[in-house]
Image 1: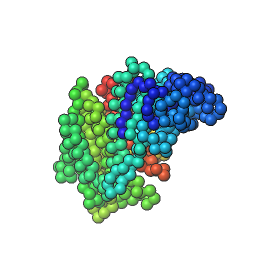
Image 2: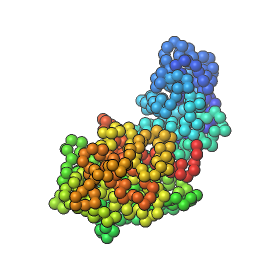
Image 3: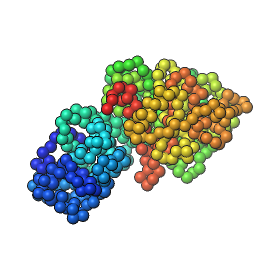
Image 4: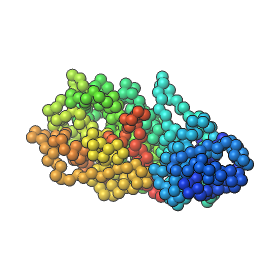
Length: 499
């Protein structure tokens, strides 16, 4: 399926469907007004007769409109004039795409630019629409390891009246498609069953990515032997109960650099988390294949960066591991010496992600990073605190916090900052080690982040807890691809692309 942006003479276009927006006031603007005049007020008369009221997402499909070459015109309700926001725009696009898909329409022209000219810049208007279309079209179907797409669309055109906006609209299209490729790759990887996507498989995908983008991405692998020699004892301990050995993949992206900043993205990659000896309840344990969504988000973000050829140096770490029950499993009561030299008393083997990440956070010091962001499905407590729509954010640096907040607001990938007050340190007290790996049961997301903060003092660091946002448990369950767009926008902003 292809996307195009151009200026059309709408009434003369031989296409399957033209999509136009109408309002509750029955005012016809831009394309809608033009096509109504061409059709001798045919569209206006239908609206006045009450066939469509113009409410958000309401649709009416018209055939054989007088003096219009297109086979169909789809009217989509856009609510009240000047009331458009991101949520409404996405709903408008989704409603239109549902009709298009239901009727097996293959080629369409979106001509709704006039509904968003005051509310959004040209760049963001097109990017939101394109991302909404791609989100609707995403379909994960694994049959004999073959991905299939059930959508019939061949091409989507966007009508652009103001040719002065042509360049910025095409930049928006390029950015939206590159970011979407990263999101799709992240979702596909996350949705794979754990008997397919294990730590070795995750590392092989990272290697393939470096081979595909060999001019921009280098790959290196840290296996269990190397982990042991580095003293990554906490990381290794988590994997001890599994026959699948841990692998940490390092992807170094080198763009045409404008600055010397090194940005490190660390993704928790627990390809399955049984909880270990502190085993999880059986109900919904199958969803623990999604405990690698942090790693898949880093993977997808690097795809977007490579496609956009961002002028940055980015280190992506995919911390692959599996937490299983076995004769060699690490135990509650064990004391582990981390790569940093700090000792940790294990009170719960289901608090394993922080044990993997603490060694990775120490490892990445060698890159002298300007910013380090770890992304992890870390705590159920974050889901309790923020629900399924907002990711938790923790940071030791105000500039990094502001940059992530800005990217969040731009993309509507919501985050909320939680504190790292010194008072939380006592929650991690241990009588026999420097730290325990869990607190007393209160403020679980905060104490987990505070634990990580003890290993990230030598650089500007942020932690994104995506346990509530990385996947959906509704009937169409699956990975969401968050926060790939947020991270991609953060990197675009670091590249000084301002739109």
